[in-house]
Image 1 (cartoon, rainbow, N blue to C red):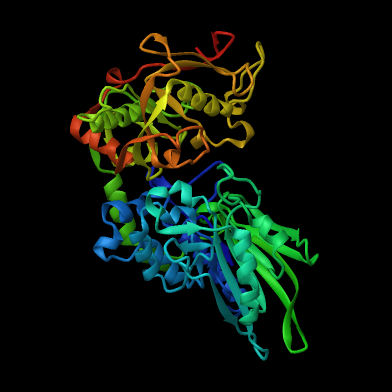
Image 2: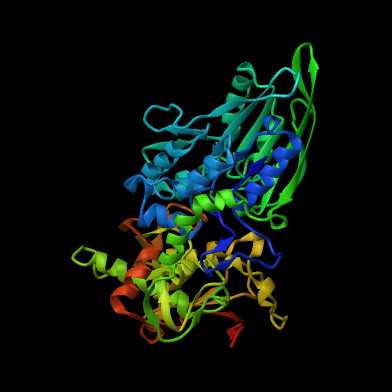
Length: 551
């Protein structure tokens, strides 16, 4: 059995809406419901003939995990991480490093690792100084069948190399991330030699073979490549791309053997169940067939045992995020932030720009104009009129990103905005415009669409990508390609996330370890009020041949 991309969900609860989780498909989430499915499978198959593994991205993603990483960090308090406590109770046999495991720094990750009753795998993660394994590469578990020779199952853990970029601040100089295919090619024969009858790769990477970054790192989503290029693998538990793959077979190019691949939907919505049939061949076990299916957590109740383990930490988090810290003069919604300039995005930009401007005071760059970029992370985010809570801020800025300020020229700003504008599907003059299909061109996610404050510009969606930014101006005049700007951004973007041009190589002017979300909270606590009249300026819009797309 396998889970992936749990992202801190234990209860079927949405901390941003302060209600039970629900979506259009009426999915349920969380380890408490996963546990009920696991118990059913164990009862059906026989507990001694089952194993349970996880594919990573476990300790980031909810207010619960944020609280025990940032507000009361477990590496300082000594408290058991809620995900460690819950997963120990479920009796996992192994988990794998996901890229989000590095979001809060190595000390917290190591504390979480120490609290687990099972290994945290990462065969392609090495100590930067020694080149040695920084985490356990694989584990071999024994499965017992009544009256039969025990079966030894090898579980190899691999993680996407993108963490070297996305969490550069936390890992640079300490950890290196090697090619997943090459490390599988190294370790699978070693596992076979150590007696593994069955080899399962827990690959925190999707099957697409694509990368969200340039060619400087090995392939991000390498699960299919691993199956194709490394002989001796029986099955792959994939993850990272938040896909739902009940069962897929990939042909190994060297042996012609079929490799089973499955990926359970994220947040504990699904449990992958892989069944293997084996026969004895000259005294050794041989896998003769494999199949998989996905079980849906919305079909079962939560396991009260897991709910009880998480209850106190869950309640602490709910109380914390529902704490009112100020007020807003009007409701500000992010629902249309992808297609028009909105006050709620300008609020984030204003706080970021203000923090960078203050950090530059007294430095040689104090006179640089400060721009700011932000992406529409959460379409459902709303800052309500009246009391505003920490939960509202967490819903607006859902990632634990920290603040950076970099230097870009006017020409580089133009390039940056052109790259961002590829997010829109080209729409001819006079053609109807449907907001539902206008965005996410070429699969670009919302978090890789940046809008910029401090300059004014139009995005002409009738033109092809790369030719869309028009009327780019600063302080009422066209932007000089040579003009220098300070640009407020986050660590994900500054380190190359999204593969935007120039920003990863731009001179760093400000590097604050404070999370941007915390800056938003601090602003409201200090000011007491969020008033769009003090910061909202409609500085960009979508156009076609000079005419606004939306009034």
